[in-house]
Image 1 (spheres, rainbow, N blue to C red):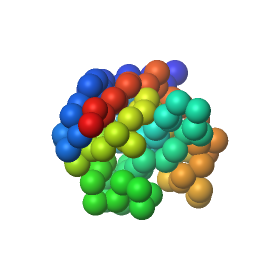
Image 2 (image 1 turned 45 degrees about the horizontal axis):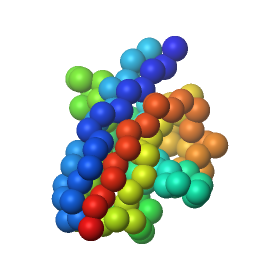
Image 3 (image 1 turned 120 degrees about the vertical axis):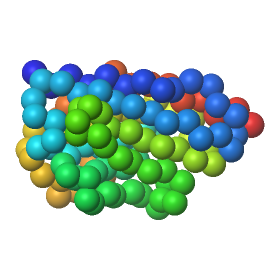
Image 4 (image 1 turned 90 degrees about the vertical axis):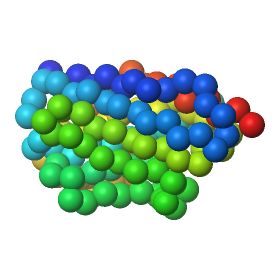
Length: 127
């Protein structure tokens, strides 16, 4: 079965640039796209980034475009989220996600389009 394990969260000062990692196992990592979502207290889970299986295509919402970068290393079965210029509004639990199908979900930003989830890693941005 697919397992996703996030790491790299913690307390960060505003303006900081942490990098999150997600290690995947249970299937051929390089055949599937990957994504990141986040969820702040009292809010719905929000799409943050997605990347195609070969890394050639990436997707971001306007809220993080230009500040966050998703990448992957298929030799390490790992996907990354580089976050820059963080502000307190970026405080949330960040989740790694993967679909059951080997293509980017048609509605990439919809959480229900993604089938596998990690346990999440907390990112807290202090002002």
